[in-house]
Image 1 (cartoon, rainbow over the protein chains, first blue to last red):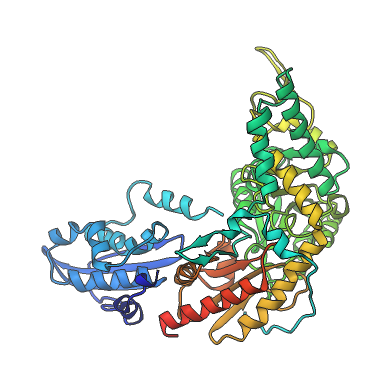
Image 2: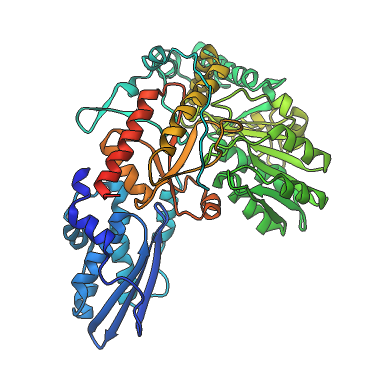
Length: 139
Length: 422
């Protein structure tokens, strides 16, 4: 499991890139991971089909925060179409570490908030959140 | 809420090596060669061979549905199932085995009471007293009932050491509008033991009924329902060496007699016609469908095991371990401990955080060292909000844990701090 906390993961956790509020953000999406209490707010400045700027605010475990930091570095300047096409496999490859099933939600919270912002959602459609909550409450 | 821990004189009389030999899972190794250190007993306990064997024996030698067959297998299984009920009644000092209703777990027990007694007795404008220490299982059913009928939840806070604010409790009861107090005996998040007998007496004097969530109490110390004087008490078997799927609601027979059934179906009826159905006698009126009878038999075997070891000795051993661990944790820079700072009014649940490392990262690194702890909100989101933390790391003891395992936990904290450079 030491494989999980590689230097670059810890570096992104301790020194998150593109962290903070984004003045003039056009699209913002906030979500939490009820298991860990991770929180991420993803803000995009979209101009036409261009993601001109991105920042995130968050707190939580190293995996969730590093995942968000790495993702923001990658998407700045990309087209909205490209951003919308990012999938979970891509996120896991970005992280480049073995993620156990119990921690997968931590790793993917960044993607979920990015999708929410990129699609201009106000809340997540369907019962994804309810399913996550049910799994998290299993004591 | 950081605590300074004072040295304690607690000792243990348990022969832990002998106890551990009864738990096959404790001899397992994880991540290659690391002996497992199981410190998540507040979530669920491990099972001794005696419990596993009792359950296997049913399946291998006389399995049949209970209460129905007139052949030997069914009669033997029924006798063991009802024998487990008698053991359970004796274990919590109930005067009558009919007062023990088997359920799948404490959560189902609380829901049974909420859906039957609660829906009949709690009306618009009534108040239900709850506390920030409650597990979600003893809060959400009452919150939802209150919403449905127009009742009101009154929350009682804790002080900075996680002890109940008695002043708030007394003030809430003084309104004269409290119909129910639904309160935990022991906090699963902090290990605080509440003065349940006093709280019950105060509630009863104010005309309120009381449900006690004893899921974290019954496994760890002597619980006497006749002495506590509450109306309802619930607990789970899986936290006390028994399998998941076993648990009980206790209530006085006269009260259970007056309550409507919870679930309808087979085994809970006396006579069924197209127009009308009459109910079976206690406790079967509340046990619709085929019970988890093998699990209940496992609970009976678990109670035999706990009684043979001795509940007082188990309680003492867990306090001994808590007294061993607390000062060692308090000595580590950056570690914050939550909950009572002395061994009075607490059990072996130790919640803490390490500055700069999220509890889930802590637990993941602990796992790589073979140390199993819980990280998260422990189904205690109200308490986490009160402590102003998203989550904590929690170690919780049982009769088979050792001081060496406490040392492994302390070493794992060192490892986590090294990985994160804090």
